[in-house]
Length: 524
Ligand code: MSP
Image (cartoon, rainbow, N blue to C red):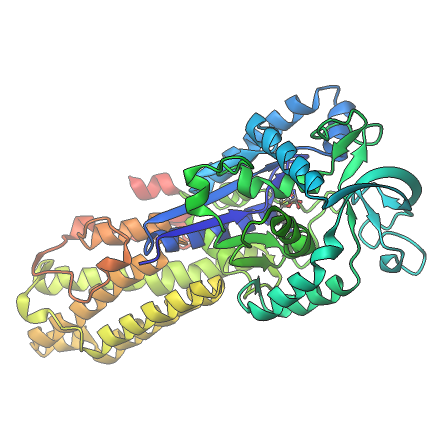
């Protein structure tokens, strides 16, 4: 068994409240982490917030509060949002944490001492939106920043520079020889292309331009560039220290996967990895970049006014728990591609998969068990692991593990739905109601047993996406709440009474059903 699994997400800027784009990434990470916990003992999931930089400094000033007060306010919104989505991280780091700041200074100093950071006077085109100098050949035809559509300012500054160019060929070679390093693979070529003409990068700002940042050690004039500060979180959080790294660090680093959006892949696969090389640390096993989430096919933006918070969806649909939203988001895009959120698609997808396909299957089958056998499994119903449906369940398990290993999270969800489809078909084809009519009770009980055992597999498969629904399925099957894959052996449901009429309830109500719209009525 694999000993540990360390996964990280990007750390979010706290200059606004969390929206469903931020949520998408945290849900993907949580789904991966919960899946890994089903298999690996020591899973460590780190997330956090990125709290320095000019934007935060300016927004706080406009609100007449200190940057730290502003960060505190927004940090709690992120914390709250992740709680509502049941994101089970082990740690949430803030870049304003004292320990983080101390180690970032150490890192900077070490790179100065080993000669990879040097001071250099430079004239360049600075975009305040990007908080960085731009390469003239990356500008639009009109000489504007491609992301902010603003003319960059020509600035002359003396800054510290990181000798990134020194590592360029080593990194190109590393990417070429490690096919799992950049996921999805189609991004690797983009990175190699960018690396071919990459130059050293400036890693400090003058205090007159950015004050809300970590100070460069032993220099009163300069602050550390926000990306150097931010990227280091992945190691400072777990106890990295130049002199004596903690046991925790030694156990966890290198990360198994670092999950980020496609917009920041360059910072991670080029800047971060070369800093690690300079520190003499191993590189993460995988940098997984996901696509972006649009709303009704448009980019989410404050100016369009279409920014949605995860809580909006949960409240609008009167959801009891975040499962449906988690499931939808985690299925929204195939590996590395963009996805879309729309209320209609959301409703249709979760009604089809969670209510109709999975929920109804459980409901119908438990009701048949009550109707024909008073809720009791008899020993002659129990099939062994060579039955065709058991083989299918095991095969689905293998597929899901393989897909997760490739970070194909939406694709793994499809395997669950396909399996549930096949089991639904199996029930239709074998028509247990007909078998009961013909008094073929043993055969009827066998079909019911196979279906319920399949539902137990489905509970474990769907747990990372829908932990509440998964718990409910196991409860209704009268099985202990344990989601470890070691429990996935065919035949765990034993003979005996497992349910009665009053205990059977839909695990997920269709979003347009009168019950879902008026929960109170359902409960009464
Ligand atoms: N602070 C930096 C990351 C530093 S990591 C050392 C940052 N912050 S962010 O708040 O702008 O974005 C945080 C993460 O959310 C990024 O991975 C980004 O790609 C992701 N997303 C932000 N908007 C998104 C969508 N609309 N859709 C999907 N992901 C999005 O970048």
